[in-house]
Length: 414
Image (tube, rainbow, N blue to C red; front, side):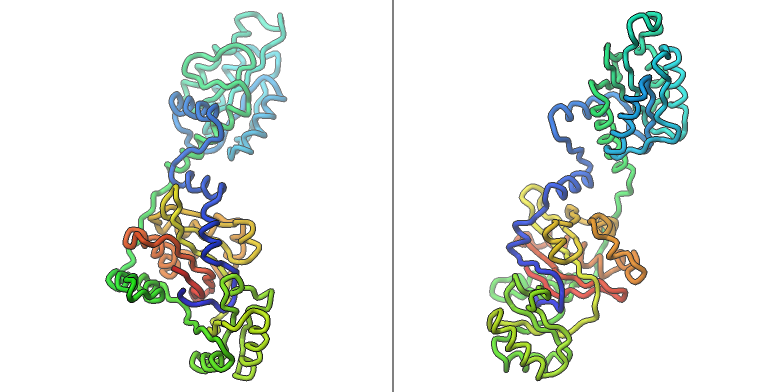
């Protein structure tokens, strides 16, 4: 152990091991590694056909053209669910009486539209005798779309699509495959970023701290530029008072048990103890309720409690996770994950991915706080550990208090 914190969420090592990346996090790891994840074998084939036969879309704006208002509306709804944006002026319904020539004209206009990146064509068969046979062959309209070089998917409720056109039995399947491929194309367009060089990493000191005979978690963290606020374990009222005098008032006192160390709501954490009398009184109350062992720590300026953790995942290897601290977010599994090694871009984006980023983006905690050296040291520094120290399987920094003037790591385990 390398120090407790002043106040923050609970986070025992065993819980972190059990909690590694969940299904949502695994999907995010795939997406940020350029892997297209599908749910069924049929969807695997749907996406594969599209990748093999069509160019990648230049963006997420999709033009929907069809001869049925119900089907084009369904396609537009499916597009939103697949992460696509329906382009302005779409869906475009040519009407049930439109023939192949009218359809070809509408498709050609959509292909020529600079506001459209990909095309969804929906064909419903005409009623018997509604159109001349030549005008009822909608497959002849597709070459106009293919000639434009924009990815096109089609749904034929009757008949077969011409060769080279990814055709799907339902609108939802067509749009879902297009959504998967569009997300992949977006990943390819993103700048790769660079892994920052942390010049103050002392690898010799890290190796020395890892030796079994001289294992020093605090020294190990310090070797990677991660300073942990000091804490002192006390097992009696006298020891707690002595620790407080040495650290300097005001101090925080916490139950030493891992499951209680951050439970301010249970009374297992006492903050801003200004003198020895208050320290002794707090120890008496806490030892009765939570046991004799307590941790004493100097107070630090307040901030937003966050969690940074390095976990050796059995499938991905080392991954770095980030989330806002707190019991609620722990229960919800509100974490973002990235595979090691992390780039500076990865470290900054970790802040935006969880569902609680508004807590971290107020005027006092602008984005510059999440791209500066302290943040890179926490995320990228911890992420560089596995290559240097392959024996490390778990590194939770919980919590990390984020403030306008920097960061404070209040508790860490190795």
